[in-house]
Image (cartoon, rainbow, N blue to C red; front, side, top):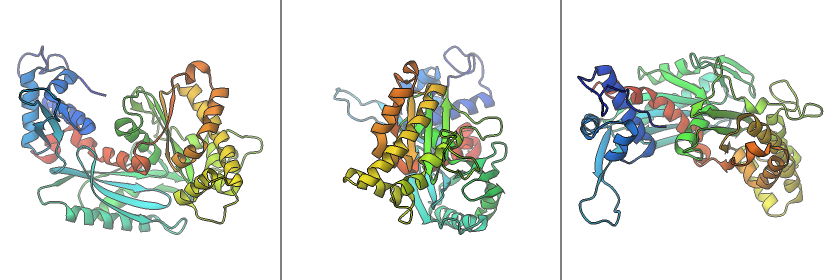
Length: 410
């Protein structure tokens, strides 16, 4: 995912003075490489960016002076002589606030460069009993406390939020939350006002952000084409094509949970249709099929069904087989459509996939196009339930990574 310098602007073949705009761009490229990979040698950075040694040293020096990176000896290699230096992100100078609005909990974190979670707060959310003001009040309280606890020399460089709904790309407005019936929420502006940081709150769809996080730091690292399926009562999705998120015209692409897989006798869906993937494989479908509709819900309820099936509970096993088959049909359609290298199951779907992997794989093997499925890998989210929070942090870091010194006023 590296980006090379523009020819003639400070690379190995460049001539003349480098413009301020080019310098900003180059500093951002370098910081992105280190932010994503954690520790990179000078040589590797120069090769990735297509620049010479003197240029890379100058860029590193500027970022180090601003407190954004540091150089230190690499891990022992077993070779004699002086150890080589690697460049690492320094999480102490700049951080972002990341928020995750899930259906059953609210999470906030202070995240440093390199994706280091420095401090985290969480509250359970009562299903169907809160409104926008409740959500904003809790998260703003968390955010103010996180900022107050930060060292005085640290600066908040951005704010990102993951929201379990359809989010308009142009302005971050939450247009629809089907499971609650909420429409047109100005969540970002409301949270930004309550935080009082004079920073915009960038808002993204939870599954889109989860897909990006797994691409950058998780199960999809190194892949160019990825499908991410996220379970949180319903089912959402994120798709990466050629290394870039697929958003659609307005930001509503990849609503994979509303792909119809059972049109004739399917279960009713929150969106008003029937037989959607969400209706057939979501939390409610699993718990009802297992005879546990009145029991625990959320990730605890889903995990209990999977654990029971592993312990020999026949009803739980049948429920997982049924849900796993529908999930396999949905995944097969996605493999045939997008030919991804990786399909990642996140949120509660990582629990379901753990219990129904053989059923899902059997359906893909039986129904997928051989040439499309021959290299695809099915994986659970390497970031676990933190995928969406990590994605929100990456949204918050966008401005800093585009203009590191400008954002910090350095």
